Image 1 (cartoon, rainbow, N blue to C red):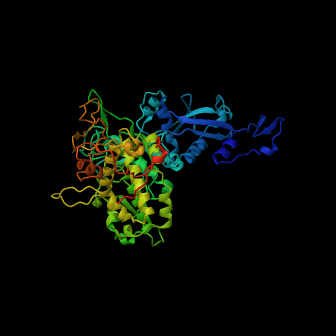
Image 2: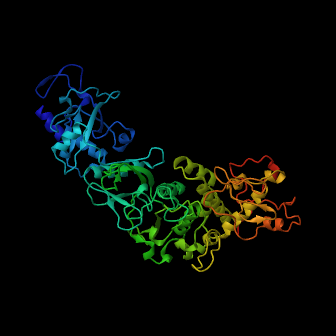
Length: 574
């Protein structure tokens, strides 16, 4: 047995399986059958309760070992499977079997454990002891009276890359359990925590809790507000930025723009802002937020001349910004990566919380690339093929299913995706498309002039509303446009059109009760073709002949008109 222990400590197996026979054998001064069949182990965290969230929070490790291997070797195998424990001393990893600690110098077969087969592995528990912990904490953990102070896992209902789930998350969790605390960054209006490795040498990921965003209930920088109220920019509500960080990554198909891996995650740590209970006592709670893999970069775009950046990088980031209606693409959230030995400066986009708004209130000054020369150059073949392959309705259904993004926000994403496709098809540059989508800031004293896309939507809505009644034109309008649920707020002839009121409102012949998508605003103050026809009517009422319907996207996948012959033709925007 001493020889076997010495061999196991060195990682050697002294038994040659090819020479094993069924007859008794003499080995190591012992007479009996050589027991070298592997033992199957399933090792779970000892600090978990029975909830589903806690089960996912810390990994379950399956392995098979030979019976004469010591538990010290098992600990090293655990550290190999969980890289985040690399810096944790072996003595800070405790292995338990039915609350009995397994001594590191003992061998696996020294304990009479139930199971151990492939069909029924032996159930063990591991306990990672903080380097500052003492034996009393260990004893309390064994008796399940010690509360879980930290944890991290990705949401199982939202897509996540295997690398982020199995490597980054486990490494960050191992570091937190080893005593490496998340660190709050100094800049920003919301909370961004840096998660480091167990050696405390490098940053692995950043975590942005949704309840610590700007104007959220637990904001640590003083920008405190209620949940789901107007936030930093109109159109994106508080506590909804984390979902948009994940949405930007999901919409960046094939990682075309280079958005770092992002997932919706649950995390718990005393370093996060605590929540006050009814009795005023602060509690450490689980938080939901965006977890993004950290990318080592050289600097931000603001410290470089824009001419050094590749045209294709600018185009791909611009394509993403147009699709998600990004409200804040400044040169501080464009990271610059300069690979060693290369003259190329790569751009990586981050900070997409202020995107997918419920309204179009974006200015050219909000987009850093609008003033760059690359935006005025034509799209390349790869960019054109990528734009042609986009599917706005399908992406909208994906975001609604996984993240619950509001429908009015998804409608705008569908419209801007179609705008991008129409513009690219007609040879427009990224800058040209931006001049259609974005407003021009003419100063605080000048009146606000709506963008050309906003005006086109207003015209389309006027026509759509005009055909909501009976008649052949009603079947011709795209249900995508009709689904926008917007109405004009001005008087036309003897008819007064107004907003429908949720839960009841004014009724009667002078009101058309049509719902209004929240915060998208009424029709534009300019005179639309429909309004001109109505205003010139001698009777002052509705005229029998209407202008042809105007559609932004023709028919989407959700449209199913009764009269297919009345399908509207697409019209280019501009």
